[in-house]
Image (cartoon, rainbow, N blue to C red; front, side):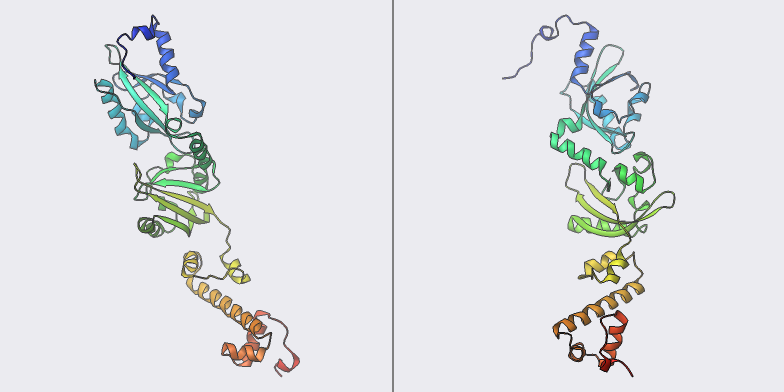
Length: 334
């Protein structure tokens, strides 16, 4: 059975202040000393994987200025815990990274001495809450060639990976945080609303074709997959955004990818004008039907014309139009 020691000195012995500091630092991934105003007077990092935090700028800063806006209320909770006699909680705060996604740290604090100083201990949230496999998965997602974005249920960006920043022609995640995703994605006020509506109804979207605009005029055709995590502790939506080649017309004109459903046609809306989409789709359907009729009739064109409900002259005209084989001399117009 675990119990509190009645003689803490037996554990710490006669360690001096510097030795105690080293012991505490060894137990924490991040160690801060704050003055009573919350200004960082000393900082120690004990993990190389926290290098994306701008540690060199922390000294002399308010601790609250090192975290994201969403995390600032939690700082007050940590400081209240430090002054309390109750059992202290570990609370998660997110720090903006120099690149890529935010860095989450679990913090707990204790007030020491008579001058109001506070010692804050931090643990890498990924290491504390994730298995090694999960931690590697997060690293892979950050390095993904597809743009990955996490938003609030209203579509405001919480975080994004480096690939999305490149597509949007931005340098840091701070430039997207708090902004509506449709500032860059799709037709403003339309595409994101459709995506969010589907996420709320169905929980996920497999493929949604739209465009992504960069800050300096670049434009990309993209496919979006999305998932809802509204039942999570911190409800959010996740978006995967992949840049694709302009293949809509190429697929249609070669006849290799005929839309088979309303869903496939829906994916072309917004990328292809309706008038052109109807014309191209009609031509594809017409050609496929003629080819099928010729196959069914063993290339008997008179029978194929009857099967399709066409006159022979109309079928021959379409055969010439689509280059579907040479006409026999008797079939050629005189």
